[in-house]
Length: 149
Image (cartoon, rainbow, N blue to C red; front, side):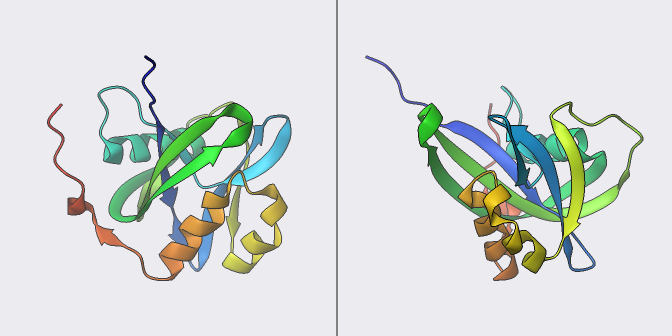
């Protein structure tokens, strides 16, 4: 009997002066836009994973402060179900470190600019996370249970 396991990911909605930070990367041979995001590593907390992924993809030190939402998305071409935890927070500074090799560029976009580039969204979660953040979804980070692992 096989055991189904979703792929757990984290993402960050990062705002500065009404613009939001997105990464441009390659997925299946095409350029896509995504929030800074990535996979939860074994033994890592969701909050630590989010801070790490933002650093690796953008060279920004990020402190998650709220939970925008939890999302499930089935990516049919690879038959993978993603469980995404999206956080809001603040930038604490930047580092002079190289970005992940998959990152082609960083973009600070307004909500209108992001919507105009919908054909480039890596998944429907890109727009949904931003829309939920703009709608005021910002749950206390304490809604996540303590890590007992």
